[in-house]
Structure formats: C-alpha cells, structure tokens
Length: 107
Image 1: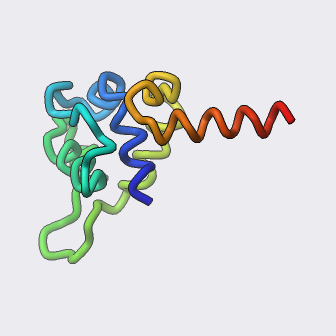
Image 2: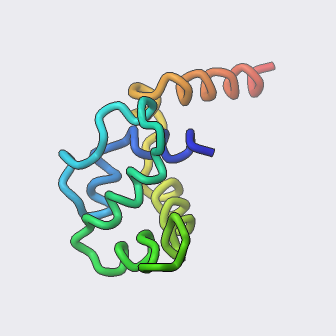
C-alpha cells in the first residue's frame, strides 16, 4: 500500500531525525510520488547510521525492493516518533482517513 509510506514521509522533520538524514532529502509532496517506497529506501540509503542502511536498503543482487528490516523500522517510526496530525497537514488522503475514523468513533 503506497499510502503508508507517503503518510510517514509527510512528517519529514521527524522522519529525517529518525533516519539520521538531512531534512532536505525528504520529499516535500509525498502524495505526488509514484513510488514512495523507493523514496523511503533512498532515504535509508542516505542514513548516517549503518544499522538503518542495513535494515532498510536491500542487499545487492537480492532481487528485493526493500531491506530485511524495512517494515520493522517503519513500524518503529510510526509507533514512537511519527506525528499523524502533522502528516495530515501535508497529506490530504491521511487527513480524510483521520476525519473518517473520528466520525466512526463518535457514532
């Protein structure tokens, strides 16, 4: 699901800090990306932390699109650092999803 990566990319400041990359490398309009997963892997590749690179970037000639602990790293970011309210300001689809969930909870 490409929305997940776009939603996480939308909290660029915290994602940059989590991945240990410069914030200027985080795409400014994540919902416009055709392949946000590739953008996320690219950020992992730029990380100053070897563990992030090892976890998120696929090994050469592995045939995989992501590294061995890619999903675990995204779950860690989402559960500890990600700010959905900030991300929703930059992602219309996330904003709509949050509003829909709020309506469901209220009814």
